[in-house]
Image 1 (cartoon, rainbow, N blue to C red):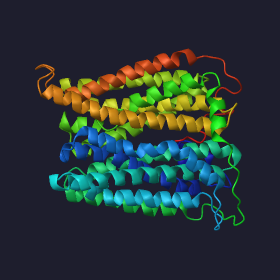
Image 2 (image 1 turned 90 degrees about the vertical axis):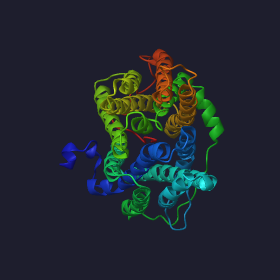
Image 3 (image 1 turned 45 degrees about the vertical axis):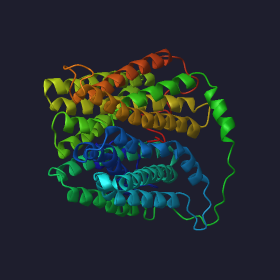
Length: 460
C-alpha cells in the first residue's frame, strides 16, 4: 500500500529499502511539528491568550529564519567534517536535535513569564533564546538529514528520496496541526506546558530512532579543501536571468510569508475561533502545499514551463488572500480555512516552479550554490516579511481602533486586512518580475534530469 499510495515511494532501492527510508524521514516529522508550534499554535497563544503585541510576536516568529541562510554553510561543513568517530552527518543531526529539544523544553515557561508585567523582560529574553535554539536546531537537523539521505540513496534514486522526505515534512505538519489543535481545544497554561514539552521529548525520541545505524563509520575520513565562495557567487549572479529570478523569488516568498504570524490570530481575534480550530488552519495550509506539489509534478511531466507554474502559484495566492480578507465582513470563518488551503496551494506551485528553474541554472554552475541561493533568498525575504507584517498590523490596528481611519474602519480586522492587501500587491509585483522570464530558451536541460519529476536536494 505504501508503494502504491505514498508519493515518491519508488525512491526505495536495494541499498535503501522503503522501511529504512521511512524511518530516516522521522526527523522531518519532528521538524514539521516544531514548525507548526512556532508558526501556528504559539503565535496565536501569544497574541490572543497572552495579549502580547503582534510586532513582538512577529519578531519572535522571524528569529528562527535568521539561521536559514546559513544552511548552505551547515551542509558544506557536514560534507567536509573530519570526525575521529568517522561520521560526517551524525554530529550535525545530533546537536541539531539537542538544540531543538532545548528550545522547545524552555519555551512554554518563557512564554508564560512574558504574560506577567513584572517578569516580562526575563520572559522576552528567554523566549527569544528558545525560538533561536529551536530554529537553529531544526535547520541544522534538516540540512544534515537531507544530505545523509542523498549519501545513502543510489544516484538514480536520490531526487525521489529527498522528495519523499519533503512529503513526510508536510505529513508531519498536518498530523501535528490536527493533533495539537485537538489537545488544545480547552486551552489552559498547564495544558500548553504539557503539549510543548511533550513535543520536545517526542523530538528527541523520534530523531534518535531516525538516526540509529543510518550512517556507516569511516574512521580515516579527511576534510576536503573548501573553494572560494566569493568567486563562485560572483560568477553565479553574473549569469543571465539570475538577478531577475532571485528578485522574483524574494518578492513571492515575502508575499506568502507575511501572514505566517497573523493567520491564526486573525481567526481567533476577529472570527472567534478556538485555539484548536486555528491550529487546524496550519494543517489546511500544509495540505494545500502538498496538493501544490502534486499539481506541479503533473504540469512538469506534461512539459509546462516551471516559471509558468510559479506564476499560477502567485495567482492562487491573490485569490487566497482576497478570500481571507472577505471572511471578516461576511462573518464566515469557513472562508479562512479555504483561504489557508489556497495559500498552501500557491506556496507549493511557486516553490516547485522556482526550484526547478534554479535546478536548470545549476547545469552551468554548482548545484549547491544555485539551490543555496534559492533557499537563502526565500528564507531572508520571509523573515523580513514576517517581522514587517506584525509591525504593520499593530500600527494600522491602533490607528483604526483610535478612530484615525474613520468609524467604518474602526475594527480589529482593519490591521489584518492591510497586511493581506500588501501581500496581494507584492504578489502582483512578483508576477511583473517573473513575466519576462517565462518561455525563454534555456541552455541545457530546462526541467532538470530526464524522467518524471523529482525534487533534488530541496532546501526546505
